[in-house]
Length: 592
Image (cartoon, rainbow, N blue to C red; front, side, top):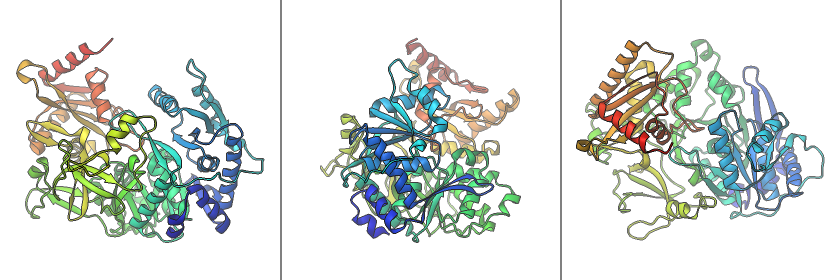
């Protein structure tokens, strides 16, 4: 089916073709209750009909190009509403439900204001709550419509669109900055589907599925739009269901013959930890061909533990595949399935100085997982300060160019020019600056961290995720729990210009003061032994205190701001005197 994707001008017309040619084939399956395999299914003909009715309603009051906010629980109605927007020539913005937390509601309001939302689509069960959120501020919010109440009409044939037509605004997760709306065109989507298909060489038809929320690019594009573009089947389940019972994700893969499923690193770690031997004995994962890991740094130890744990259920050792992507590249950039985990064991000292050099099996080394080869983008690895290209095996910022690279950020000309208009020192460009640091070694892409997260301590370059991972590896009580590592400037005159390393780490329960003190001090020992620097402060936090994005990425910059503002409420904390002074000084500088 890749030939049809390559020829298509728009995703909306491609769906219409599938409704004609594969009318009775399952398009979307939402598994309500994985324990009992209860599901709601739309065929291609039914999905086309639902989208046409929603489009007809939208075009009755809105103009082409208007932005439409989609607020749905996971399910088939959100998929129908998304295609309804495309059929009507509208721009879809898929976002999380308002919820009860002030921070989430504030973020949603900022997205609605930034995009200039004309109408909100939701379902009947959530209509009252969405309307309450929309009108909670002084100025009236956008009108809300429950699309599952739209059952009558002739339906709307998709309005003309081509590869340059804007299809959706994908709001970034905000792991390092405020969320921005990435402008994704029909051409971006179609090209990215081909890139994804090229990496996994899919059987046709196949089933792609999982629990990633539709408001996340992995859930919307890889998990849903890609199989639909390929005339295959998307199998969806709730993220809440997965978090409560990780086993049910694997049961859905088994029961519904899912051959490709992607998830962040923490999901594989959670399954390896939480799935019981009794549950394991009920699973047959032999038909799972592509277990993709993305959306957050992949840990080699997690990948190996996951593959070992589920080998007895038929999981093959060649199915696990780290992949790399970002919203600004539509979603998928690199990955290679069907060959197993590829690992580079490199010199840790040279890595801190920006070079990947393999070491002998018996020598000390740090293991980095390959994210595959970049085949559908033009890639440069660039010194982010000088903008000069670096040699293979040397760490720099990943720059990309290609048909999957988005148009820019909605309404942010300066940010668009900075991120999407980069040129190398020799004048080559424009490129997308990803903000990710990595290197090409033997043609494989290795990601080492985020540029904004990079910590420079005593002239050494350290990545926070490496420190966080080492702490979890060294302390069994921390396994599966997120932490946030960052640096803050010291303020004593003799320490000016120096950075202090801080560790914020979630723990289970409420440890006694003695056990908490012992844990904090042994954590400091780990940082000193593994990285040769001192942790100036360790704070142990209750569960869910470390802020994360919808895909599980730790929001280190947000945690740093919270720490400096005095907003962290630790169960136990141990700080060096200089660090305490820095926090106090930062608090005094902030407006009250």
